[in-house]
Amino acid sequence: MCPEPSSRKRSANQGFALVVALFVIVIMAAFGLLIARYTTTTQAVSAEDYLWAQALHSAESVVSLNILYRDGGGGLSASPVPSVENISTHIEADTFVATNTPAVIRVRADHATGVSRTVEAKYLLAPN
Image 1: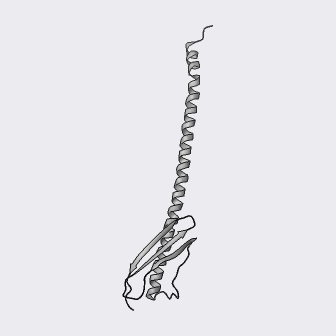
Image 2 (image 1 turned 180 degrees about the vertical axis):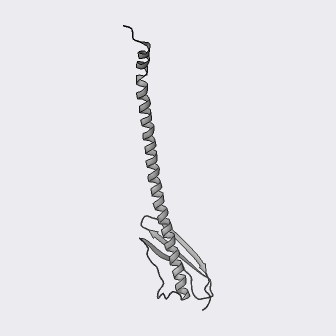
Image 3 (image 1 turned 90 degrees about the vertical axis):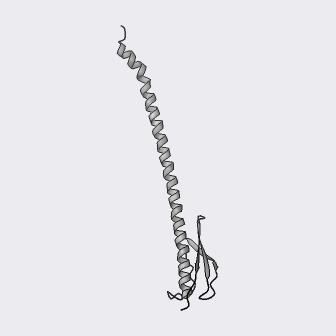
């Protein structure tokens, strides 16, 4: 009762398939973790980029509205400082004194997460 040569070969390779399967599972799990981490990081960066853009546009709109107010356009009764989607805006500097005089306006927009953007515009209003 001598074992056949093919069965000896099979018994020597039985453990090899298990090792290969475990190796493939570990590699696939590592790739899954890397993809999950990349996705999480990308989502956080995208959310922050969105807030940066929103803060920038808020500050720019306050600058534009204040220049429009100084120019007498738009029927504005007071200098506007709007708040947009939890982004507060503050006029840090406004050197306007009269038409035909160069002026600078600087506006900062802040979000509760710490995102902040500052916009500065230099302008000259012609007399009406």
